[in-house]
Length: 498
Image 1 (tube, helix red, strand yellow):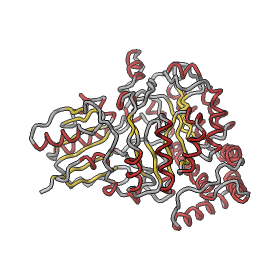
Image 2 (cartoon, rainbow, N blue to C red):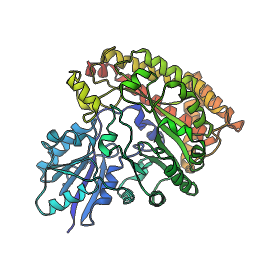
Image 3 (tube, helix red, strand yellow):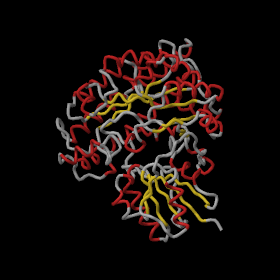
Image 4 (cartoon, rainbow, N blue to C red):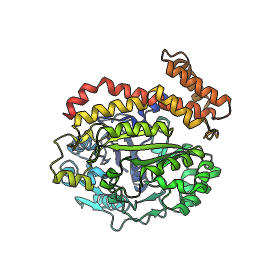
């Protein structure tokens, strides 16, 4: 008889607009995507287990279902919920195993709520953990040593995931990061030496995916230009639409950008982090040069019809509240419609955390706040409430329809975004048309009506593909809905961060 394994992604107490949960709802989904860890762990599990995957953002747990083993992936923002779940299932007699970055750097606390913790990568460690459970010799911690070569990887068990409830699926083609930014965990978790999967192995996985919308979760997809080029050229015949994360130097290789666009890349998340060179130096973001190079790089990427998801952080010791205005003006000037704006937070395991702890600047606030918009440090040039208030003002202004209209004109008027992405269903086209009618054409907000008129004009002039024009409207509608939800809780948020 097979043993029962339940894999859980815990629910977050707070979700910021960058999670695009409201966008997912617009498209009839529950979540943009689920963590890759869960279907990957399932793929590493022997056939002797009956496996269930539950993402609490998508569906509730059935507390009457008691498995033999429970695996829980953790982030800083979900670790408290993970502790609750660990306590519940241990009382029911299940063996509870924690994994993920939060548990990896909170081992002592994690072991108060779990029987064992996987530290760092799962490959190797997870299999040993299950074997020891079978032999009644479970250890407190497991850690793969050395890290897996990662030239090949098992195809994740997407068959265990409610695919109809998520918008896109995750794929990983490489691990590691050669950079060493003080606020980031990546190089700590996966090492500074890059490990790349064989391109054919990645393509094999992509071909098996249940979705045509893909996000490559590599922390720097194009760090090795030669390997990235090999992969994207093999993606061209597959007809997918995909996004990824890269450092700003991806703009130095225009042939690679051209190939990425032709293979279906529609968006690159780039960590600009700061326009303040002193703040970049402070956090050891040495590979980002001064902001003077940004404009040229942005123009090159946009030239190939690829959006930039521009990520910024405010709250470094060299920052003042004026950084928010600098970021707003910069994104307006450069037509950056997708802006991920964060307040600086310190995650355990990072150099920033150690620095803040040493300086006594970690207030006794819940880790639930660590989602990028609820300040949870003692800052040098601003209070937490001042930072939060300016943050809310700025994301509202960044995503106002008046601002978005200006950005859309700058971004789309040059005619670079004319290639369509992966096919969407007839039902989804009908739903988007319905939303456009009621959210834009009939809107009492003149700037929303103007947004539709502008997009329609650009489409009629063959300067913008229909799906990319409608996608822009839906994307920004989702963000505005999320920000409006934040505003309704603003007094609650202020009280929490005080």
